[in-house]
Image (cartoon, rainbow, N blue to C red; front, top):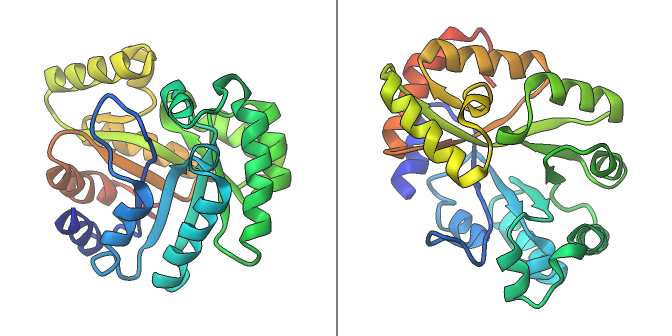
Length: 253
């Protein structure tokens, strides 16, 4: 993992992110611990949780961990938080999944109380108007989910609610092999429930030129940060983005 982050830094990427789950179909590293373990390799990079789950973790516990990571990194933490979409995470901690959004907003208020002047708090969501209204009032920005939005939707929502936006969970597989693209999209469709044809227009899976078009569209929508999630060999995936996609952009995010 340290080698991956060092490579990202050397290739010019400016942030490193980790997601949060307690219970998942695959083994999962704790996001705060994972980011703490790469502090030296990530020198100068933003550290982001995309996203941490304050209801599941407990807002006071998350605030304490976030303050520590922000201090150790010299103030480089972006605290992305969300209600989460895993019923299993809530069941594991004795919380009602059906009440996740009311519980979440209470947790956000507690985070603000525990983090005065602390790291910026961004809310991850699929982008409903009700959630974004609250995000605009109670957070510093919106982390959109790539599988569940488009550049046009992000632009419209940000204009409507006066938000800054980044895009997280941007699955990435730059390839000239059409069969590989189809296999990757089919797998993503299986785990997200989003049709493969829809995902093909939303994630960076495909040829360098198609990936560059999507990044450019997000730039035009006002998005300044994309958090990539390389599929397959992660280091090779980053190298392909840096070598074959970013040079097609005049001002890469």
